[in-house]
Amino acid sequence: MAAFNQLHVDSMEFLQAELNNKHSGKTIVVTHHVPTFQNYPAKYKGDVLNEAFAVELTPLIEQTFPDYWIYGHHHSNVGSFKVGTTELLTNQLGYVKYHENQAFRLDRHIVL
Image 1 (cartoon, rainbow, N blue to C red):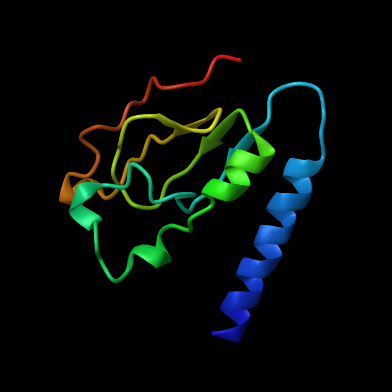
Image 2: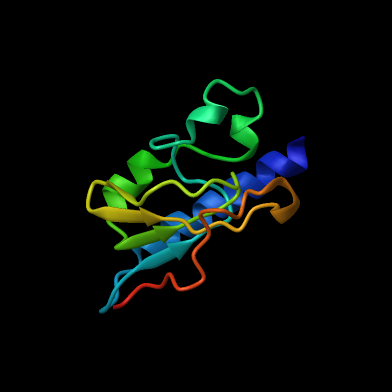
């Protein structure tokens, strides 16, 4: 458990440092884990395993203003939404054998 917690700390320090490193152009964050429980799939609300899939990073998002945050991991394609000025996007294939791929869009992309 200590090693897992240290990886989380290291990952958070990396994200914070990179998001504070201002540059010209768009800022796009791509993570496997979901960065907020906002707009979380209803079928998982209250599940004891949720924290293995998502971390509440709303304060980080609101303080650092990335343009886009692309995420996955819960195998559900929920609509895009905003946290502050950041657009959160997902396009998850999920497990095809469980038909989680029904809302996956092969043609989905971001135009910058």
